[in-house]
Length: 220
Image (tube, rainbow, N blue to C red; front, side):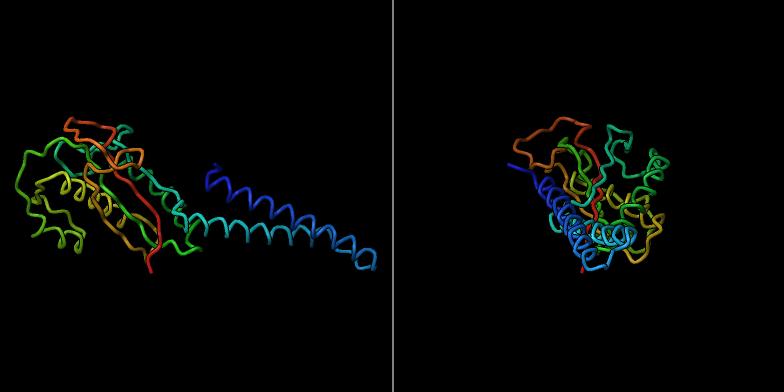
């Protein structure tokens, strides 16, 4: 079975070839009528159609949830300290990602991408700290944009959310694009690195599962 991406791009390429052949045929027909189409004009028309096809491709990718995603993997140096949501250990590395994020936003802005989703993923190892004050401090942390050192988590779901929030606050302060929505989520230990839902209980530490996922989408 063909993948969705294969179908999209093959369709676009075939459409472009069809339009090229059609323009050549029209050009020859006009020559017979002494109405010769200038080669430069023909190239402009082809470029116009190609731009339209690229826009269609982008819209299809958005519709099929195929806009680019970025993963900040612990195994690739985006490592929080144990039991912490502080991005300081990899802040400079995260800063280098800003340009890539800006480029993605610029590329897909014309098809309505205006939202960055940040999802925190953890492994299944049990959190020893059972106390959480997220209900008291989480919303004020997001609103003010100031990290609260006394914020405390009580579960993997809490920790994934705090880490996603920490990255989200940094992005909001450093991304050039304005009028963006930021949505913060936690997947805790439920989603594996391959995108599938976990099918077994695994309480062992696993650095491959600890990551932050950044997605680009559209909010109405």
